[in-house]
Length: 365
Image 1: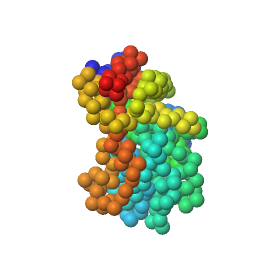
Image 2: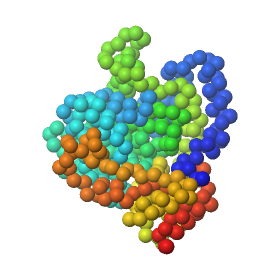
Image 3: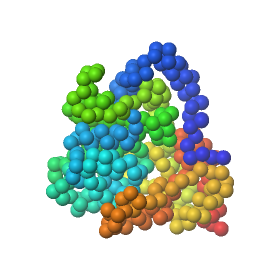
Image 4: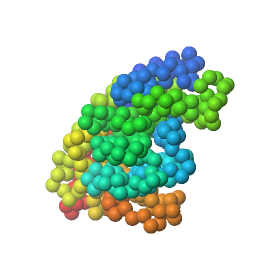
């Protein structure tokens, strides 16, 4: 059996360090916003090249709190992509704002800058690009659009920890960046967790207040806040993995490039790299008109596979009535043929060859 992500192999590598850190935390009985959370925030801020990094309870919360801190609220329009996990649009809806879905680039599957420009109205207050599957969005163009129209730029980096564009880490370019530490992510916890990053002292102060019941001083509350604090135990795990994140991401890139090499002669579209941004391959998503046959063959061979994403957000039940008139041809086309193959730094070359062999058997039969 080959899983999508081999978390057991990863744990075996860091087991001693993690268990030592967890034991120390239990012994010290400092569980909420303790020394490991504080250290992790400092370490990630240095790694990502930002002034502030604030741990929160999930990637969804990171997006939600970033929107509030940047002043996005009821009736505001936020331009984003429909080809992503629903948390991106949920966070926009949480603050009473309106997600404006636009189409994607046919190569990168990231939000199209041209589509963004065409969707701007007097109600537009922010753009939320997603660095999908670990591929950085076209931040040069998007940043120019934001500056031209005086819009907030909030980066959804929930799939792109360690990815960079023009030498800058994703998340460090806009007004704020949001990360997820869901276990399968490139930098994953052993449960939920998230992070907001920013270079703004004001935004950072608001996030810290919002994550802790609207409080700066214990038992004194200035705004209605939330209970959204990164757990101390998860911070122990994340600190151990952060030390190895470049190694992990390079391992993913090795697997991705081997896949591309082995499938170069097959009628299948492999991920595009623009050589401007560094893709960290949170997922390895390919396109094929024979998706169903390939998925069945992989499943029969006990090889992990999944579809990211089968239904674009504007066609999801929760949104489809409000967006019935919205047509996103590229997004809809990609959703019909995309699927993901196993990828993680612990996937061996032989396992990659085995996976490709199953695909080849379907496509050359």
